[in-house]
Amino acid sequence: MTMILTRDHKESLIESLVDDPEFARVLLAEAASTFLNGEADTARLMLQVLVDATVGFDAIAETSSISNEKLRETLSNHGAPDMDLVAMIFTAIRNHLRVTMHVTSVDAGSQQAGFESMTQTRPDAA
Image 1 (cartoon, rainbow, N blue to C red):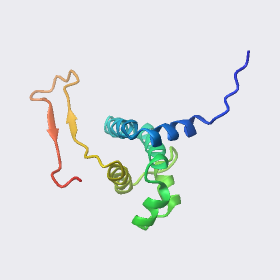
Image 2 (cartoon, one colour; image 1 turned 120 degrees about the vertical axis):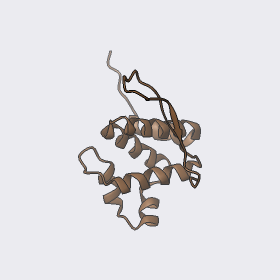
Image 3 (cartoon, rainbow, N blue to C red; image 1 turned 180 degrees about the vertical axis):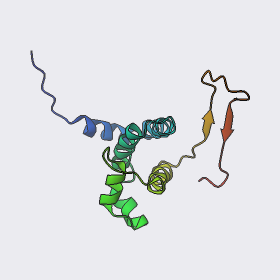
Image 4 (spheres, rainbow, N blue to C red; image 1 turned 30 degrees about the vertical axis):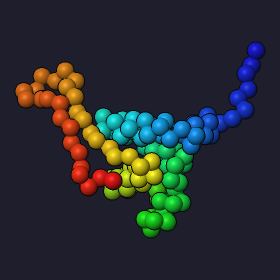
């Protein structure tokens, strides 16, 4: 028996993110964690979906004077991302979702002397 998919999985994911802002917040946190843990390609793909489901590439392009094409290229898996643009995209999504992000590092079994958990926050983050 062959099952035919009638919807694109990306469309379903975007619809879920639009319908459930908490899911979008969780995916944003996961994208940040993924990015900080060295999986930039995966994080950029997550950010693509988040931008499509939240603020939109056109809105970011309009407020930043960066072309829609340049923003999409930045998040593509074949692009050469500009760290300033990636940071701006994180900020645009974060502002749209009205969240503040806090980074916490945890001991992953490191043998480094003095390695301990820490929390870093920015008081100016909105």
